[in-house]
Length: 141
DNA sequence: TAGGCCATCTGGTCCT
DNA sequence: AGGACCAGATGGCCTA
Image (cartoon, rainbow, N blue to C red):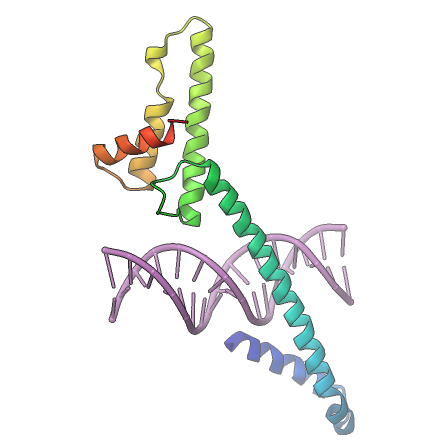
């Protein structure tokens, strides 16, 4: 790729400045090979790291409410969904505490707030039917 | 076909 | 020195 070739030529220039022509002929292929091997090892590590990240995203998708069975949430959507879901659960917990301390379930708004936040801000779903279906699916378990 | 999403490569930076 | 993490670039695939 573009940046790779730039970097390779830069390091080759540095090397040529410190080495005789004979030395260069002998060692450049070995040096390039060494660089290539290190690069490939770094690429493999990066691939593993990103695969680990994707595994984590998959785990998150499993515990977060999801639209239907077919539509896989994107990474961005997964993070936004997790955020609003956690916030909604927090609200429910704090309102439950209020109820236990003499409050009233009619003031339970966490569920509604999650509905409003997520449908409108994150998924851009303005339709009441779509949002109601989402609510039913999300909190039925 | 344009736009969104993703995987991969890469170089730079920080940490151990 | 080597590994982890990050962000930019690039190309492939899919969908409206």
